[in-house]
Image 1 (tube, rainbow over the protein chains, first blue to last red):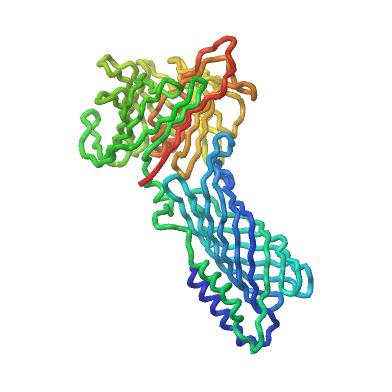
Image 2 (cartoon, each protein chain N blue to C red):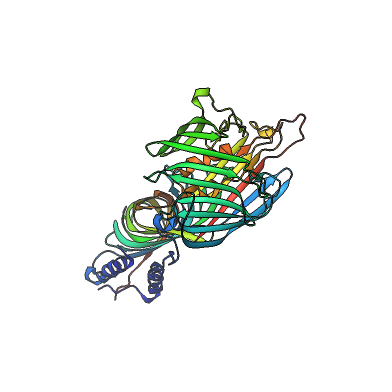
Length: 197
Length: 325
């Protein structure tokens, strides 16, 4: 899957909206989240687990109160790969991460104040480690699961109290030999109401 | 009838899709292990922190060129030569085993099969140290010969001939011929994750085992233990390696002389480390990890015992490696 596919898919979904004129409102939501991720270095004895903080934006089309499909964009704010498991000799290098893709979200209905949700994620991930005078870079498809709960404030505004996610990269990050990460994030979601003509 | 989102929402959607169009991977980035393996060591830094003072020198690549000639001693075809300029190491902790204290050049020749053939350490135009690598027909490193040759035309001061035998692809013994008296040393490995590391090099017939020291004496050149960070414990010398993929990123030799934390020992003089080619050629030689450990064991000298020592701090020699294309 590439960016064109994601873009085309979302445009296609948006194009369906007029045909679904009678579905319940709102049809869109946007989200902004921040969090922290750990990239598991597995059996690699030379590298400690890698960390990065990130922000994430997303846009979803809601097909019903409980089902939404959309895209997300996740970019690291800061991160590091630490070599050497012993603190005395550890060396750290900056790590940058980009993830984007689509996610399918299933949630409780809008009538409840606390809405748990689960999401299935598929997309693309890029990892870049700045190492002296060169960069190590890897990209992989990524798939994962989100589990979270959000709380309603007012009519359209939600606080995503906590969302825990797993990410699996079938193409390992070759220099880390890593294919799994775990993230925790929090943020806000805003429902965009569509006005009737 | 439902309309498309109102105009005030469209910028949000536009920003979202503009953001998606970005990538953080640049054209010049190294995108695979294969590309990474093509990196060359362009320079390395040797930083010394001792109780007698500190020093940092940087050796830089000054020459890298294709060659095509036959070595008259071995008949091997030399296809590439690389040279590094090494500033004087001073008289602290890391030294050249030949005793040379001047600026030197490290000249590395490669065979036409891209294997390390030799490293010469040259003072001006004179070879003061020579390390020669020999391979079996299947490409396994089977021998390293070491020559120490004073610059003033005197006879060789040291000749060591090490012959390796393998079990599969793992070195199982070293037979050292030192001044005409060969002795065979068994190599013992421990497991570390999915790999292995050398835990002990011993002469089984004489019952050598980990002695806790790193004597460089003629009779027992391998009686030494290197403890990895995971092992803990309290020997007198530590080694740490940190890796990026298969490239050595940093090599830290630590002489634990401050015994306040337990395990150290300050009742002796400082250890001396000697520069060995595998400190920069580790990832260019098969079994380089194991060989580096073996020669680190062999290539340092424990300081003599002293009474009523003053308080010492730990001493370190750290290699930092820089790679490029």
